[in-house]
Amino acid sequence: LLVVNSIERVLRAVNLEEPDRVPVAPYMCFFEARACGVKIRDFVFDPMRAWECSKAVFEELGGLDIYAHVGAEEFFTPKPDPFSVFWFEWKMPGVDLHDDAYPAMVETSLVDEKVYKVIAEEGLTDRFRTRNEFDVKQRYNIDVKDYFDTVEKVSAEQRKWLESKLVLPMGGVGIGYHPIDLLSYMRGMKDWLVDCFLRPDDMLAAAERIYNDQLRLHMTRREILLEDKGIEGIKVGGTGTHRASASFLSPRLFEKLGFPFLKRTVDELAKICQIITLHLDGCWSPLLGYFREFPKGKCILQFDCFTDIVKAKEVVGDHCCLMGNIHPALLSTGTASMVERECKRLIKACKEGGGFILSSSCEVPADAPFENVKTMKDAALKYGSYR
Image (cartoon, rainbow, N blue to C red):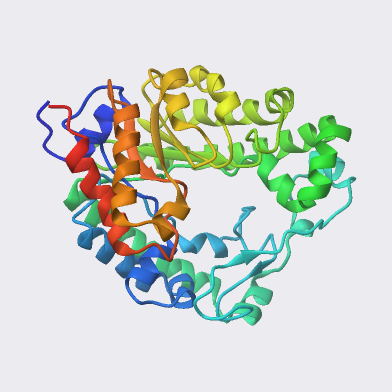
């Protein structure tokens, strides 16, 4: 049971073996800004400052077993992405909102139902973009090239830092967002849900085109990805979905529209990566059995509070590593002793046999007291030992 670093601890958990203790990795973004006294506006628009905040919080917590940081730079990526201001309408702090507000998507129906046939024939062309680089510069006072030059510099610094800490990042290699998620944001929630029942075949054809285009882009980068050996020889891939969950799709629709793309993405990433993380928002409790079709001992299923993680342990815990899922309301408004009790409950229910990583339910809320997040780390040390 001797473990010398966090990488080995996580590898054993993913491989469904018992390490020295349960790994701990809260998923963080805007919490890091508030913890450092930095306005969310500055955190979003200044990648170097965001990186310094993230590193400082990691150190103040005494280190974590995975660098589970959500990058704010996603908002300015020009590729089709639900967070991208190029493709979707976002209200941003310091522009549309006050300086310390969360970014907020305005989810509206951008196109009519004929969009599915257009996408199936043409793919996601520039006609579907909300704005171009000139519009972004005018609206947000940001030069996209300069921004991503800074992001590239930050990424290089992060890589060296993680190598020195012997800690893996939460994700890395990716293929793209689940096409059903992209289509849902394009159509808007109400119209998309209607389309799931009235136009599932049209939606499927559009999703196939989106996925195949994303895969082609991934394959053109594959030689570069293969040259990158990862940290300590471990390469981590990432994917995920929200709108394919049981919060939105019935099992029948999940089999048709949701699972095929999720499975194909995991299988593709498995050709390159030793670990695949799946960020799974929404309720997955009725769909847990599907995850047994993923490669055994290779995936981390990151569930939020809408999935019963204890049930997940019973159904798929001997096949995939589970990660989660302290409720955000508890982290925001609960006391440290309440957080400790919940951590203890989850550890007791899920740690047996390995395959469990203690984490937050999706992202740690920005207003969570630092003490509550530190309590998660301390609880893993106090209750998570396998010795």
